[in-house]
Image 1 (cartoon, rainbow, N blue to C red):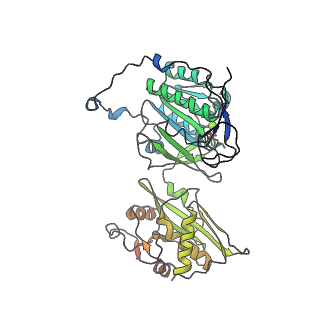
Image 2: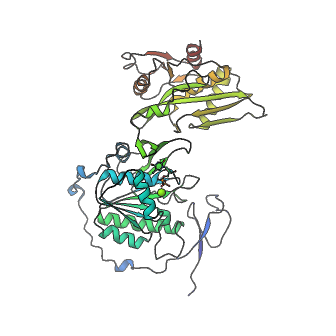
Image 3: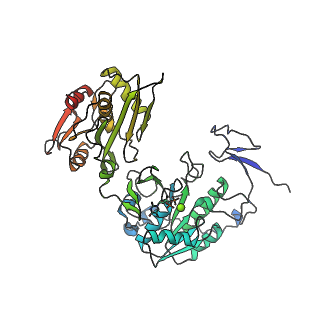
Length: 449
Ligand code: TYD
Ligand code: MG
């Protein structure tokens, strides 16, 4: 019998009877690939001998103490306290960002019987990395394997609680002839993995490379299969590494974990603001300091702007670490409300430290750094600036003003510009001088006056 071949988009999963260059559903180019049907079904669903034993909701007991902490605080914070038995945690990130390093350090810290299954590297390569990280755990065993049927059997039978599978792109199942890393293989192998983990109550840390667009193995297809998706992020030019939960079935997706990649692996950042704020750029035009909120924490931010005369008919605008549209809004407000002459200027803004900030509480600091660079005037080094900018040129209130003030004071700032409408409970107690402003123009008058 002739097997029926179909074509599937690796981005959105749409199926086509023949190959086409561009997916009609998601509009992506070159994502359609041949898919081949399963070789054989192992078991008909009617033959399954599942025993049904539903439980009354009121009878189900939750053991609050089943979480197993990794011992790495910044990682446990992201997980929501530790690992839950029977869960699959996907750690996704660009190649070379430090995923293998992170999982090896977790296995060392946890000190429980564990098996590191790899299809990416040889035994020697893992040993070299372990030596570099000073890892000599007795509990850790390594195996080079990529077949999911073998791996499933290992998870079931091998006397370990923790398993690492490095990486999903190397896994394959005997039941599919397509190549490892293809959409079909990735979905099928991860589904099998999750299935065995739920049955055995073991814990699997699964590594996945992401492509240039930031997708895990192309589609979003995996996110709903696993329990937790953690993204390991960082700029190539910076040592800062952020563990950000994209999905967490058993905890919040609010907290991030902060690490620094060092010569000896990932180090937890005890005082993260210190790496985000350099202090070497103090007393330079275009430099402003602020604070932003990530999860439950406040962190300091250093903003550097460069405004220069443009030789292009359309001036360039560029921002690293913040929303580009927000920059355009700030520029429009400065143009219309402050009459700042930026139309003929190239504008470059950089949030230092390699972090991306999605908190609008640094708007006013960005505006101040632009003013500072355009007019070549320095913002006094003891001033930090917080506040969101509204379309009428007003400085809007933001959340957690007190947390931000505390963080900035720790770094030595003694004058802090804040929105007038902010709640005043902490402001009255603080040692530093708090300047409350209603309008962007009022802030500029104080800072540059
Ligand atoms: P790795 O964990 O192999 O990345 P991934 O598994 O995500 O592909 O880390 C690779 C990079 O990290 C490599 O460029 C070297 C760097 N690195 C350090 O800077 N310090 C270290 O201690 C280790 C082990 C790696
Ligand atoms: Mg790796």
